[in-house]
Length: 73
View 1 (cartoon, rainbow, N blue to C red):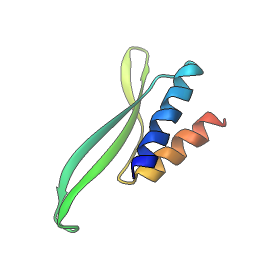
View 2 (cartoon, rainbow, N blue to C red):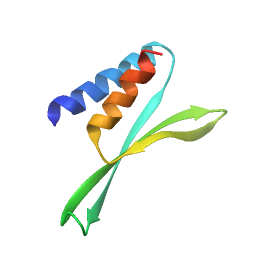
View 3 (cartoon, rainbow, N blue to C red):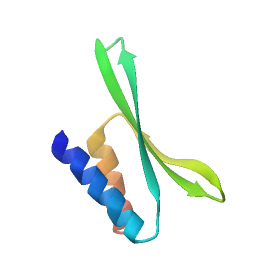
């Protein structure tokens, strides 16, 4: 899990180097189904002065994959 977080930060830095500022927010909620705390990852970007959600997921690997795909466009 720590490796995925580090990779997420590196991809975020790579986007910044290309001129895109993508913010990664994490929200924790209690899941009745799982019986534990779960983390939601929300990726946002500033467009026209407003913060716009571009992707949200409960899985960190999906957030990493999204950033990698966006970088390769």
